[in-house]
Image (tube, helix red, strand yellow):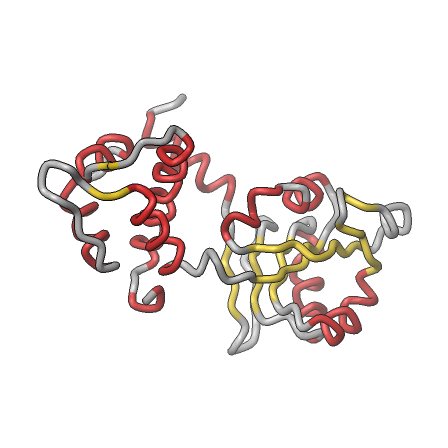
Length: 207
């Protein structure tokens, strides 16, 4: 069903899931569309439309069962399907992402880090080892991992992207502050941290 959802709808569902996860921890049994819309400051009609699109129906004056709705969203967004990925670049951002344990809650497993710095190769971030980038092709052949999280400096991002694509990577989550040029059949998601911050500033009128 995920393929039938718009990109914006998927983002909203992840936000709903965050609320539901918090409600579960607080042992709150039910939630209404108005509560969700109020917390996220979006139109309640949009919330209802989103939940209807994933075949989730609430009860009048009761709302939605929190655990049931959380499970449905996890199934729709494939949270329970493990997706293995590699982090390229063992700098501050790369090591921070590799050490973020909550990724596993959403079906993402970081398997390894890759870098060219001989001082970092062989180190471990928790249980995740840093490997020489030159060995990535062999690693991919042995494991079948085809997702890369790119955290390299801007000046080498395109060169590294070209290299890992030739090594077998099909999907790139790009944190480098540059737009990558990739061949047909390769999928890239550009994570624009600065752009998101500036958008926030503009919306909130932060000077």
